[in-house]
Amino acid sequence: MIAILSVNSPMNSRIIALFLLLSLGACRSGEDAPDISQIKIQLDQQHFEQDFFAIDTNQLENSIAVLDKKYPGFTTVFLSNILALMPQSESADLKSFYKAYQPLYKQSTSIFKEQDNHIQKVIAGLKYTKHYFPTYQLPTKLITFIGPINSFGSILTEDAIAIGLQLFMGKDHPLYTSEEGQALYPAYISRKFEPAYIPVSAINNIVLDMFPEQMSGKPLIAQMVELGKRMYVVDHLLPQLSDTLITGYSSKQLEACINNEKNIWSFFIQNDLLYKSDPQLVREYVSEGPFTQAFGKESPGNIGQFLGWQIVKKWMSKNNQISFDALMKKDAVQLFEEAKYKPS
Image (cartoon, rainbow, N blue to C red; front, side, top):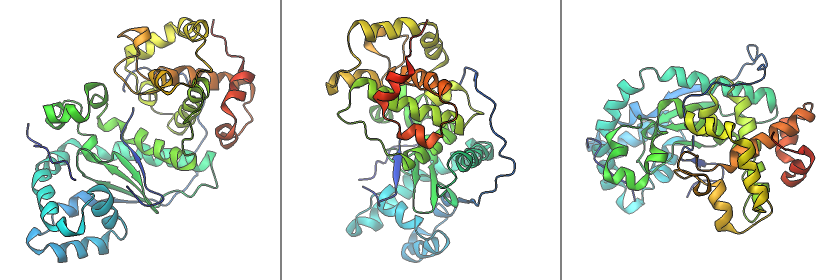
């Protein structure tokens, strides 16, 4: 079913969904980024939402055929996977979605008038991807679209990376702050629905495509390191973005983690948590939330990824000739043991 809210108050084998997990603020401490000025990539930029919201709903079958000709492949993905339309109700539901979300589309044209700035960062991220992962087959199209609020912020199809603008309208947009919107996305999630998250969402999907998550059942330390590995790679694929954007923490949350790194780590050691595998316990430290219960309301949720990131940085400082591909394939527990991480 399509989630249709008032805007005024299952997938194919390579489609990967990402509902935004990522905030603005603190500056980066990073290394010098490699020169990508000579790297050329093919990327056709297309705005599906412009053509979709210009269709004649009285001539729906013909309009969809025209769309499909201009956006071969993606039109089917949009109807079947993003809108999740069933054949027997396609016409009525499509018209309902069109009517409900057309005001959002009109608002998006002003919100995203500087959209190219974010798109250019996605393109730069793809160039860094080509630098670090030269054999990876990059998408050849970048498509923007507007889908239902309960749909995807970013997906990969066979030949495209597609950005769902409905999840980047700004954290204070009525679509998110309404009672229905908050039921879907509580404030700790919707505060991140800013246009600046477009590059992070897109590049996280690229990394997820290259290295699908395989964390289920693993002990806490393994899951923390796996998250840290992904963050380390995304950080290098988007070196121009702030650490808060990369982590998804607010500036205050990230500062609290940095200032209390030793105490946070001591908590995990003293409570003998690292090799625990109980799903409920693990989830407390490696899942999104308003904060981490053990560390109080000033802490971020998913605090385990911060420690995992620090562990990976420690290990990479000793193994800086290792490729990112080898890093991602490295056994997480072995990496932790070799890192000999001990914050002072």
